[in-house]
Length: 124
Image (cartoon, rainbow, N blue to C red; front, side, top):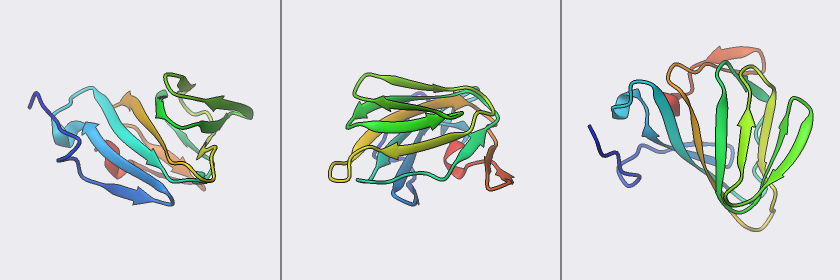
């Protein structure tokens, strides 16, 4: 498949985050996993890690992140680079406005949250 549209992407909602897979194995990608990410105002993830490098490119709004204890604030056009196995907490820096990003990693990623390891469904 050479075209994977956002309109046809499955939707995964989790605690103020909406994931829409664009390029993942279930949508034709063999090596990369890329998804659109919407962050509701004030949304903040639990601390977690991934066993692969992950990159978030901010499309709109302001996204805050803590990567292995380092706090960053990213705006449109900025990239947050998260090394493999780094602890990450990601959030929308605004309590009023939504934020959007595109996330990229490699196929086969395993997430660890609260000591539980699993493949995120939006990366499959």
